[in-house]
Length: 297
View 1 (cartoon, rainbow, N blue to C red):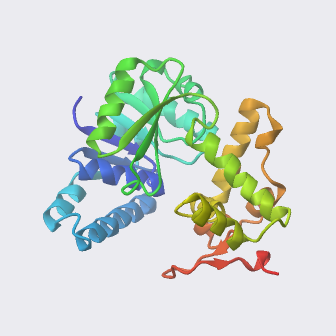
View 2 (cartoon, one colour; view 1 turned 120 degrees about the horizontal axis):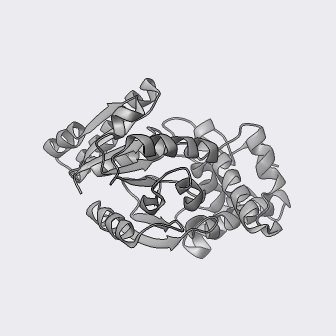
């Protein structure tokens, strides 16, 4: 395949995916309808590259080459019309993704592979919006994309072996470790992770322990790099809630039902890092973890 990759969505995941492809020699079209979001994404990528330079992981020349590999577009048709691979990284909303995939399918070359970075939505359902279901696949990167090594690759019902093999090899070219799984609710990463996070929220809700105590047990006792409540804040509590609802709908099993506390926090706009408060409070420039006043006392 040629080397042009289109990334749809210039948010946290989209700019990270564009970054790693560009840094590994691919030409990248970063596509978003919001021009301000595209400019913000370029600033974020530049800042992250500069951090790599300071740490000695990258030289100045490679930084400039990486940036020159990225072209921004605010019209989807222009951004995908010559792509060999499109990676959609838009908001985790089923209707939005179906709409985007129909547009991509109409505009992208016939041999183009269409990938989605969804963390839980059915690949088979997304593929049904296209006329090329054998060329649709999940390519679930982890946040922060430039740092995390895993790519969870999800085969839809009709995904061809050739497409899977191509995406596996592409992931390796990015320095990532691909893990191939099948298309069932939550795949593997979130089918295991989200019930753990939900149980941690229930433990807080039922006053079994406090925020710091729950996270400390999991960090020191289970060797997790961060506790489940801090991780939920990092992912976004709205995203956690959405994935749990996908699990409930997909399996019809009440064991995946989201904790009422999680539902209330999302309704109140306490979404974690992105809103400045979740289980912890977050201030720009501060690395100290401060438990939300809501959970003190």
